[in-house]
Amino acid sequence: MSNPETRHPTRIAELSERVRNQIAAGEVVERPASVVKELVENALDAGASHVQVDLEEGGIRLVRVVDDGEGMGEGDLALAFTPHATSKLRDTEDLEHIASLGFRGEALASIGAVSAASILSRPRDAPTGHRIEDLWGAVGEVREAGGPKGTTVEVKDLFARLPARRRFLKRPSTELARCLDILQRLVVAHVGVGFTVTHGGKRVLDVEASMDRRERVRRLFGADLADALQPVDAEDGGTRLTGLLAPPRFGRSDTTRQMWFLNGRPLRDRVLLRALKEGYRGLSVENRQPVAFLELSMDPSRVDVNVSPTKSDVRFHEGRRMFGFLVSSIRAALAEADLATPGETMLRGLERRGAWSAPEQGVRQPYLPNPGARRIDSARPGGDELRVEEVRGAPFVPENLAPIIADGEPVTWERSDDLSGPYLRVDRTYILRALPDGFEIIDQHALHERVTFEEWKAQLAAGRIEIQRLLVPEIVELARSEVEALAEHMDGLGEIGVLLESFGRNSVALHGVPALLRHLDPPGLVRDLVHLASSHGKPPTAADLLGEVLHSMSCRSSFMAGDELSDADIEALLVRAREVGGAKTCPHGRPTRVRFTGMDLEKAFHRR
Image 1 (tube, one colour):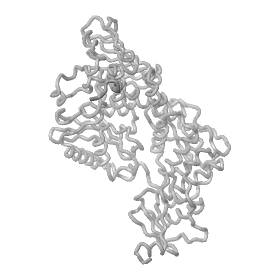
Image 2 (spheres, one colour):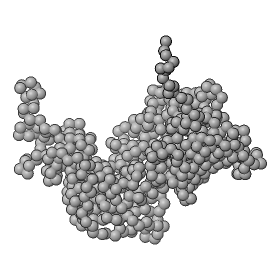
Image 3 (cartoon, one colour):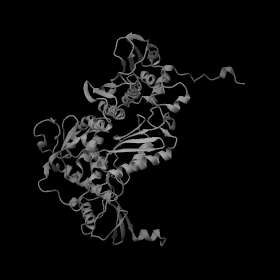
Image 4 (tube, helix red, strand yellow):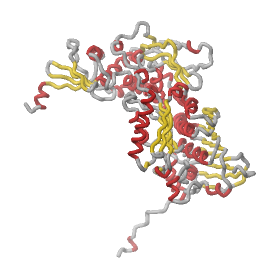
């Protein structure tokens, strides 16, 4: 028997309800976008015909959602902040037939545990409304209050009392972009509902109800994309796939324009994303993500939506059959539209011989340190004759760009070397070249990327960027949040020869690009820049932005795996590599070539 005098003290203690709720909130509330998603979904479940979302500081300081739905009475309001209290189901059997967006009864309790939250609600047939507060997990009493029919939920100072959680939030512009991404998905999914979104008192989105999906896309992402979309409509065993598919030229470097909906519920399910990618296989350019807006309509009992707290993943009861149906339907729609034409691809093809010629005479321009500082009015007469002032600047080589360059050992192509063919090509990716003492295998993309990177870096070091001016500025339509994200970085982009200006509320004007990138599709280039500009959690330094853009753009403008090169193309590439000094690695650190000597072969065949 143990001696009572030596018994160890009890260390396990039951957590308070407030602490439990704050811990549980971590699964539901990650950032302001999580709050926006949960509150807007509640508004849609309440039958709202219009939803207004007001944000401040990217939703960190305030998220307010106002709807004209059915509202809540005093009794329901008293339970609104109670964990696992919901009007959507009563029994586990109800989970098999869930048609509402929310159903777990976790969202409001989780939000109230990590913020100062309040709800004002008035049923449609009630003469007055009621209000309740949940301040950091302390739920107050329901009080009578005046208000419009429907529900208003305010969430203030998210994570203000939880510094460990607050620390992981990004700058307001980044959090705003994530909120708008969630809202755009809901706007595209629910075309019968009107939406108004403001940020800091300024309206950033306003769409009326009764628009069809194509018109919603037009309002959000521009007419160029909306007009090019190809409809898809297919059915298999009670499952229907409808929506819109974009030509491959609209491909992006991210998946933010891949929108899947299941019975009105936005999803980011990996199976669906993979099915879309498989459907575009052979049509889209390498490393480009297709753009699509697709809805699945099916019996709720054939899919499990209770997989994760965020409800962004699902589990289909016949997953393999579903995957096959989606892939075949997407391919059939694309084949019918004949989207796989050469002019439809994002990269319009490098002009193989011309790609290696020196920049055209007269395109060398002074270094531009600040081309995009001023904004222009899209309605201004003569808007297609915009000019960017040319300013000479000093050489610019950021110190912290050095670690990004990933220098390797110099390639020993001497000027006396014979770089001419013949060459053997493998899988239109690798080049085999005979050497006096063996042979070498060259990765055509890795070497071309390194050469482009070194040539561009040399121009920066010399303080002069060779710029290819566009005879007519390319106007690229973007989402409002993307224009704002890009505007913050226009000065930095100008330092490397990308001449951009804001052009109204939902577009930018591209005036010029570095001569090394003149063969790239301008809209595709701008979309890549948007992704880079919006992916930073904090304002990047010029060197941060420069390093990322140098890497990305040298990659985009290089020969790709699968490109068929002539002997002249290969020889020109090797000559350029010799001129810039070369390296054994591409900017990302992958080898550009591997050499095998006669000794290596004798060892491989066990002759030594």
